[in-house]
Length: 450
Image 1 (cartoon, rainbow, N blue to C red):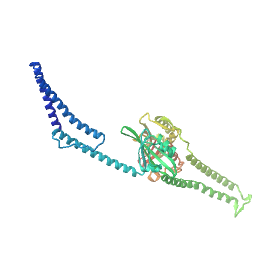
Image 2 (cartoon, helix red, strand yellow; image 1 turned 180 degrees about the vertical axis):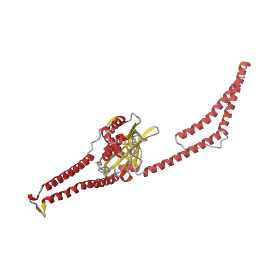
Image 3 (cartoon, rainbow, N blue to C red; image 1 turned 120 degrees about the vertical axis):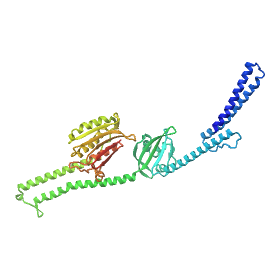
Image 4 (cartoon, helix red, strand yellow; image 1 turned 30 degrees about the vertical axis):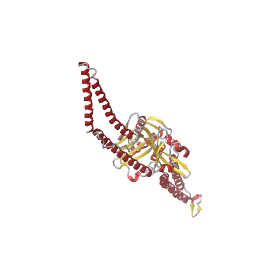
């Protein structure tokens, strides 16, 4: 309706200008009535001024309207009782749009308040900062955790704890780190996670910090309990027969608390004693090997990281796997996507992890005549490189799944029970994880996430 009336008003003025121009041309070129030509010239000037005023009047209202939006001024009002119908319709339309924009502002403010309330009540400390290090938002828990009233710049964190500041400064998007924070109120184990996003063409970093000391203490205590149970079981299995055999051997040489005479010691007694001592020696070696295995899982070297091609690593594993038992009955497939995928890690340690996982898959499929094992390297949805080893073997029950990472726990007759434990520790040293999943009778999958 507004555009139709506006077009009509403009069209009338354009037609008047055209008519005046034609009449002026007729007087000058056909009649040579130069004096009378002043009248249509003045008419054209008047219509032109009127047209300019008319358009400026509309433009001024539209300019005021957009200027008010730019300045977020919701108090602007347009009168609806103007005598000019076009201006009145325009005012009504601008007022309607202005009301809609005001409602959008109100909805955005409500939503912002809602998310701000969620942020404040979150059980995790959170804050965001830009490329210059200025902290734009921080919730109450983050400030309480760092024992400050206001967070304005990440440089403040250096006064709180230099290690914390260095971690926040160097952390990459989608990365997580575990640090120990020493404050006056105590020692905190912080899990620091990061993510990046774009806001108003500015790249911001979102940091979440969560004190997991209690969870770590509980996990550590439970791990120690499991470890002690396994160690006690292994030690008792080794010591009990040694004790019993020692008592039996001592019985050959002591009777009723007194040592037997040399004449009573025959060849059979000596042979039995020698065999018994050999058994004791073997049990002692087994116990020494057990302790040595414990030493291995508690003294892993720090990874020496470098960039290498994942394809070369998996080709190496594929060649090694051809020498495993039951290799001729296993169909092994390898896939790397993208083919140029690289890792920044300790190649030897990651190779050790993969060899252990692939060997476990081969051993689990000893009786499977249609065994299939797939090694796949790719990048997950979060942008992290992953390597998975999947087989179609018997799988792992839920009961055993809770125990497979416990040191020295094994279901194999000649297994040491430290392979998966060491593999998970290596991944933790790399800042990654080793995850196992299985459906009994269908598949077992081990996934390395870097």
